Image (tube, rainbow, N blue to C red):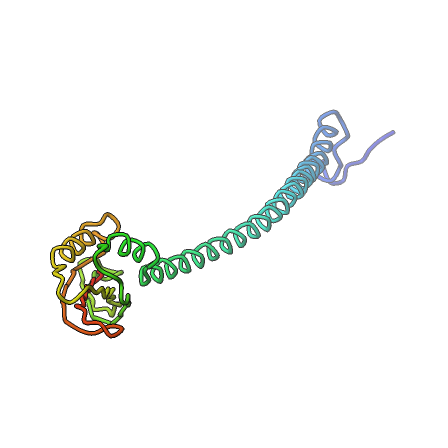
Amino acid sequence: MFTIDLLKGHGVPIRSGPKGIAVAAGTFAVPVITAIVMLGCYLQTTIVMSMQKGHITNYETRIEGFSEAMELQESYLQEKDDINNRLSKVSSSIGKHIQWSPIVAEVVGNMPDSVALASLVVKQRLVKRKVPSADNADEMVEVTVPARTLQVNVYARLHSDRSIEIRDFRDNLRFSPLLEQKLENIRVSQKAGRLDGRDVVFYEINCDFK
């Protein structure tokens, strides 16, 4: 069989050989391998994203739980502040009052046998005092506070001198363990009068409380 090459070797296709097959196979394999690699990367990315979405969902669930706990904690803290404010008001209110029962018992217990009790009265008035500010201890502010005086009236026979007993009575009250830190001053006065048709001398003991 004769082959006539009119193109003088320029138009005749190269015969398939091992090199041609290798080149053709290589040319075909590159996009296939690239596609496989890209597919693997896509699948790996999809798996990683799915796992990350699971983690994110788990974190969001936990954050929601923490949010409820934080809201509950804030509620407890608010309730605690309210209770502390109420306790502070109660403490302040208690400081404005005096329990008189033990004081009356102390007065009666120290009263001399030579005199009799005519009356026992608590008098209260409002006075202005300067105290350290609650916000700044170095700053003094003026406040209105109650000032109380326990007025004890006792009497004896007109011509009996009970000055010594009354003085001792005053000193016993002034240095009493119960009253020593509460009393600011004790004032004593006396005057003659009549009681139930009898001439008597009245002793007025005024105990000023701090």
